[in-house]
Length: 364
Image 1 (cartoon, helix red, strand yellow):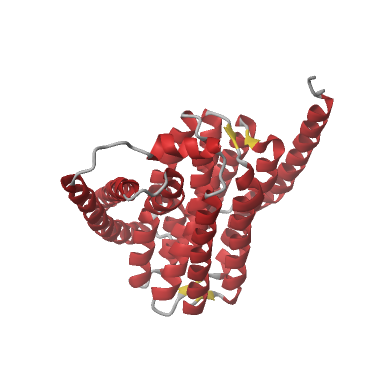
Image 2 (cartoon, one colour; image 1 turned 30 degrees about the vertical axis):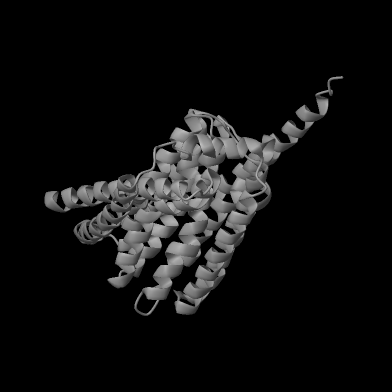
C-alpha cells in the first residue's frame, strides 16, 4: 500500500510539472508569434491547466476504466467552483466581470445541463462525444471573437500575467518547443502512474473507482487551477481567477469528457447513482454561480465560505455513501435542507443588496 501511495504522489507531481512546462512553452511560443495575452489566457493557459484531467481521463478511458474518467471530470467541476472559488474569495473577495455574468457562466450552466441530458440513457457514446467536441470548437471560436471586444482593463490584466517580454532567438524557440514536448511526455507518464495507483488504492480500500475519481484524483488533477486562481486573486486579477475556474469546467465537459466518450471502448457508462446524485450536484453547482455572481458582481468572503461548506458536505456525503454508513440517510436529509436554505439566503442577500444600492444617491 505504501508503494502504491508513493506512486500516486509521484504521478501527481509529474502531472503538475508536465502541465507547468506545457503552459510555459506554449505561452511563450504563442507570444512570440504575436498572439495577444488575452487569447493566450483564454485558450492555451486554460487548456494547459486542464491537461492533467485530459491525460488522466484519456488514459482511464483507453483502459476501460470509465468510472475513473467520469469521476475525474465531475469531481473536478464540483471542486473548481466550490473549493477553488470558495478558497480564493475567502483569501481576497473577487469581482466578477460582466462577460462572466452574462455569457460564460450561463454557457457553463447550459453545457452542464446538456451533459446531464446526454447521460440520461446511462451512457455517453461516440455520438455524444462528437457533439461535445463540436461544442468545444464553437466555444473556442466564441471566446476568440469575444476577446476582440474586451475592455482595456481586462486586456491589461491578462497582459500583466501572460505578456512576458523576453528576447526571441532561435535557441529560445527551440527551448520552448522542448518544454512543450517534455511537458507532454511527463503528462503521459504521470497519468499512467496516477491511474494505475488510483485503481490499486480503490481495490485496497474496497471503494469504487468512481469514488476515487470524484475525490483524490479530481482534487489532484485540479491543483494547477488552484494555484492559478488563488495567485491571480491575490494579485487582484479577478478575471483570471474566476475565468480560470469557469473556463476549466466548460473545457472539462466539452473537451475531456467529449474525447473520453469518443475513444473509450463502448463509451462511458453512467451509473444510476451518478445520475441521481453526482450529475445533479454538478448542475446545481453550476446554477448556484448565477445568483452569487449577480449579487454585487462579486464573490464575497461569506459567499466563498458558503461554497467551501458545500464542498465539505459533498465530500462527506461521497465518503459516507462509499462506506454505506448508517448515517447516510441523515446526510441526505441534511443536503435536502442545506440546498433550499442556501437559495433563500442568497435571495435575502440580493434583496438587501438592491435596497442598499437604491439608498445610495448619485453624487453631483
